Image 1 (cartoon, rainbow, N blue to C red):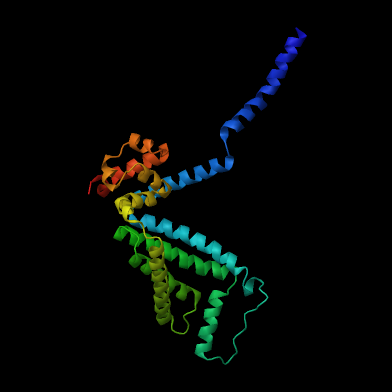
Image 2 (spheres, rainbow, N blue to C red):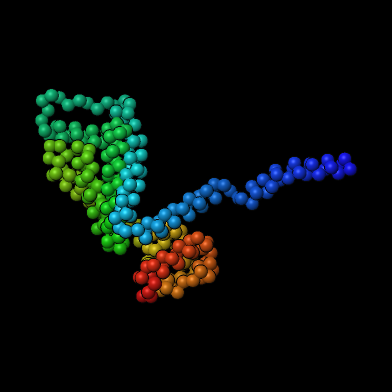
Length: 268
């Protein structure tokens, strides 16, 4: 009896650890689970954003871009002169001419301390993200015109906020905006040239746009593998998406997007 009672106690004590080990074995890689959860949250957030009015989406996008730019600017500013760089910023002579002062302002705009750089980059990236969002909603796609408009706005605001436009802030803001737009347009064209889709990809243009909007672009290969072209979008069902091995969450988002978007719900 004593042995049986002891064995029962041992089993009772060992049981919780055994269950924990079993759960750990079934749980898989924690890093992969965390990554999957983050992607799922991001997909839900993108889907929520797509349902919002243009002013709300633009405001949220601008705020997120400003936070990201501010963090990057603060990091860069910590490596510049005011942040302890071995190359200190020279002080302007008392009798400096306007051209010299303008050049110094431009240098200070790009070599300020953490707070200055955080402010400058927050304005630049926030404006770029917000204008890009508005242009994408208005034009229905991401193209070179929208990209250049966003670059112009962010460049002009960066010039004004940073003070690099002294002594002619308006003229220099326009000049800086044009320079930003030209560079952005060039990069956009280069990117399009090197990432030009193959001829057969034209059958998946609306599908690709939808998946990018939902943050599910990695499932484009699943659509191609199942030959689910743009013409099949109005006919898609849960079972069809399941056959091409798309998980339940993304399937729901895709079907909901097709239901809400008249262009996707109509065959072309």
